[in-house]
Amino acid sequence: MKTHTLLMPLDMHLHLRDSVMLENVAPLTAYSFSGAIIMPNLVPPVTTLEDVRNYKKSIMETVPNDYFEPYMTLFYKNYDKAFLESVANEITAIKLYPAGITTNSEGGVSSFDIEEMRPTLQAMSDMEIPLCVHGETDGFVMDREAEFMTIYELLATNFPKLKIIMEHITTKEAVEMLDKHENLYATITVHHLLLTLDDVVGGMMMPHNFCKPIAKRPEDLNALLTTALEAHPKVMFGSDSAPHPRSKKESCGCAAGVFSAPIALQLLCEIFEQYDKLDNLQSFISDNAQSIYGICPEFKEVVLEKRPFIIPEDYSGVVPLYAGNEIAWAIESIE
Ligand code: DOR
Ligand code: ZN
Image (cartoon, rainbow, N blue to C red; front, side, top):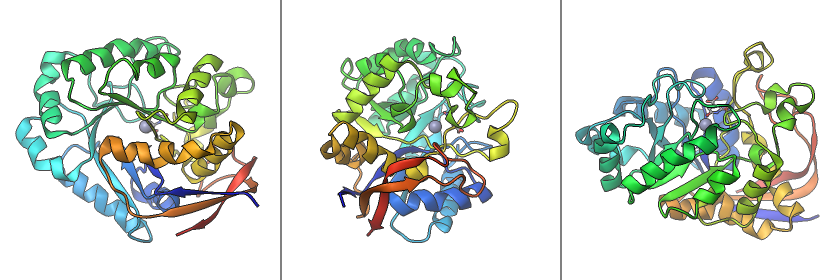
């Protein structure tokens, strides 16, 4: 039987929520990943040192062993330098949301006035705190990410030493940006390596494939695949796994978010094998992130096996990507 081993898988963009949802989903990621960057868009968002500490503690209480590191983030506000100095040792990055652009982002940034943001961004740059960005404008839904490229350029050129991570990129425009500015990096989800808009609304509407940013055109999918499969050194895996209860997805006013955490590694093996690029998966799933963020995760060895695996219909009431479908790889063992 064909197997493939991954060392210290990292999910560089993950939503764990809080309370019961956290208890249900955190162990699924902790099982197969060494660590994950934890998104701060709770209600209310994570904005204080106390929030960071409490959230990290609740995450650790839900995971069965010590072999999982939650890399904590703050929700971007125009924080002052003294505050940033007080939290710098306890966070790995700060996540910026344009106000109202996605789930629980109402308190985000409403104007990209660089001078207003300068003190915070310059302090982050000096303290080497990376900035993770949800890069969408409030324009037409298919154009939102491409329109945001001018804002990425503004940020990248004004703060050339600040590491800026374009989160969950979905367009060829974003892929092209990677080589234009030294300080721009990106995460890519597994669902954006599989889906186009057709899989969301091309036939019957598929709420479990609906997320922000929405899946785009075949040419965008191809650009993302090319850069992920070659494990471009500025690109990392970030699932953007975003659990919502079934009732919030299969409803009028469907919440945005694809839940992929428990099946991400299996699907990535399938994709990378299909293009004969399995050798590059280690860089995409961990090594690039280790170099970009300068992190050194706990040892974990995940062996995947090529055998049919049927994705469960749900995990504690949360429907995963491709629920009920057979995929080609399964997790065989974890040490
Ligand atoms: O689809 C999404 N869901 N995109 C995001 O940016 C946020 C996420 C969530 O928190 O549900
Ligand atoms: Zn997200």
